[in-house]
Structures are given as structure tokens and as C-alpha cells.
Image 1 (cartoon, rainbow, N blue to C red):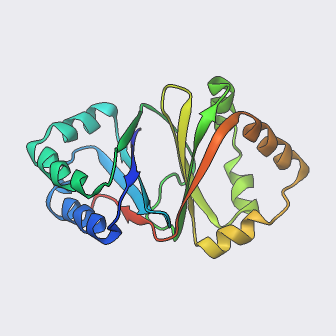
Image 2 (cartoon, rainbow, N blue to C red):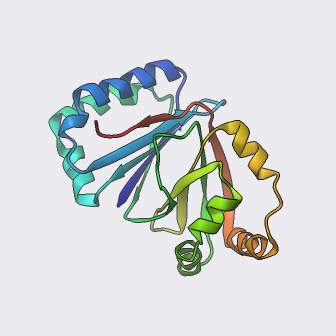
Length: 202
């Protein structure tokens, strides 16, 4: 899998949502290898989009299409400043990964001090145990930026359920694993998408 993360500030979230709906209606059908998109605008006007493709090559083919370029040329005008992109050739996932069933999505960004250990810990995640402890958690994806940075998208059944789940005390072994994971992360930021925009091929 390949993930592209798109991020920037917008003043009119409704207008951006309309442009994304236009993409879904008119352009998505030709995006071979597109697996799905997650996006939304936080309370302070920050848009974060996480777009999943089968491969980097599929993402590039989509970017090279004239209709995609024309769409982005107009859509980019809705951003009030610089738009940043992270192209993630390495993607980790757990449980169901990205899901259109989520009622709440939290985006976590930061840097890791030991990418190899970070990968090992995600690869060793016990999905069955995690699902039993946090039934509110649908799944997640982690895109590694290639420069030590990462973007994680965490999908929950609802924001209420997620907040309640945050208060649960995990078993000792799970707490130790969580603390080890957090010790690898620096400069962590959280972006709450209370009304996530979730799309996938029809």
C-alpha cells in the first residue's frame, strides 16, 4: 500500500468538501489503484487528508492525469497557505486498517527515534487482544514519511466511544508496550476529525 498525506489550512470547509465530492463523482472512476480516502477539517481549520493507493506507481498515474491536475488546480485555491504533502511508500496497518465505517478519526503525526523498532512493535501488535480491550477501535494505518516522520490515522466507531476507551486502564503488559511505543515518538501532534469524510471506490 502507498499513502499520500495532504495537509493545509482552509477557511471554507464546506467548499472543500464540495470539491472532494466532485472528485468522487467525476474523477474517481479513472483512479486505478485508489483504495480509499480519509479527510476532514479540525476545529481550527486544519485539513488533513489520507489517501490510500495500491502502490506509489498507481498514485503517480493518478497525479499525471489531466483531469486530476485540473481538479487540483482549482481545489488548491481553497487553501489559505502552503499545502504540504507526505508520500509514504511504507505503510503499516492493524485491525481493519482504514475504514469507511468510522464515526470519528484521529490523526497522529510526529517523528520516531528508531524507525526499525517502531516497525517491529506495530508488526507485533496482537490484533485480537487489542480488539477485545478497545471494541471502539476499528483499525488504523501508519504511513512512514521516509525521513523519520509518520502519520497515523486511527478509526473509531464514534468520538464518544473513543473518549470513553481512552479512560480504560490497560493490562500491565499492554501498558508496557504502549509506553515503549510512546517513548519512540517525538513532536507528536493530534488532529481530531469529528466529522470525517470517508470515501472508497464504488
